[in-house]
Amino acid sequence: MTVSRIIADRFELVDRIGRGAMGEVWSAIDRTTDSEVALKLVQSWATDERELVARFEREGRLLARIQSPFVCALVDTGRLEDGTPYLALERLVGETLDELLAREGYLALDEVASIADEILQALAVAHAAGIVHRDLSPSNVFLHRRTDGARVTKVLDFGIAKSSEPATQVTANNTTLGSLPFVAPEQLGDSARAGPRADLYAVGAIVFRALTGRLPYGDTRGVPLVALKREHDPPTIDEATGERWPAAMVAFLSKAMARTPADRYASAEAALAALRAAIGGRGPSLELPARALDATTTMDGPPPGARRTR
Image (tube, rainbow, N blue to C red; front, side, top):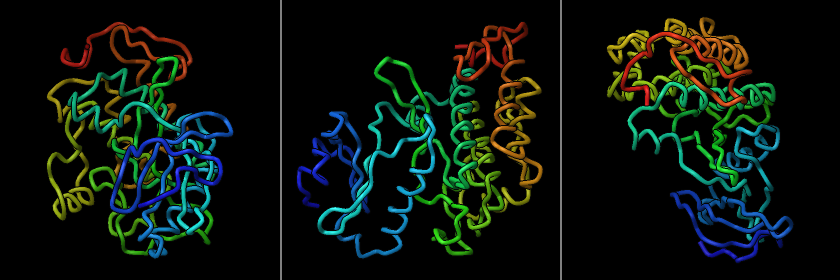
């Protein structure tokens, strides 16, 4: 793709930081604010793919409706002179949760709780705006390092999100969207049916993976995984690790990943309250940032496993 170094008389391209089959991501300077942004551009050949372009532009419209510090923010959207659409997003520094887990295997409970807390806060805002993500997974959770050194979780990629506005729907029936290990059972074969509780299932699966070092249904893939998701509950974290976890945490994950949507938490806010209550009752010296709990809580009792007390 050959593009001008100046986009929309505003964004000055610096370096290409990512490239995929359908598009590119550049670091750029927003000359109106002198700040760095990430600029997503559709590949020029892909502009003839009407559905792809519709999804890309729709993502910009949906992001504009979500005002949360835990969602990658939209700065601007538009088209180049040749019609190529672009999205200007806040520039994030750090790594995805997927990259962190690939390196570490699993994470300590306090770290996972803080990440999940912020994901649920992001979902509460998105769901209030009538938007269901439908593709939550560790690869779409970014751990951004702010200039002051603090880390904040950012939910990425609303490209296949579902909106409450019927005119914006671009998902055909009888299709499965999202990362299979993290999608809810009702989303299998018909992603158009996915509601807010499907996102809560995905949060549960992310927490399970981050705590245990394995996926809820292990290494099962393809059709066998679909069958397991539809017919069997995932194991508890006790069963997956051979360790005894706090009952409240086991209950939180069991409810979040219930196969039937009605058996899950009624909302992201309800799930967030349950998570905070479960973490508040965890073992010794669990300290979470103020944004995750109303107050730092220290409790007595054995940790759920020595290997997680790092």
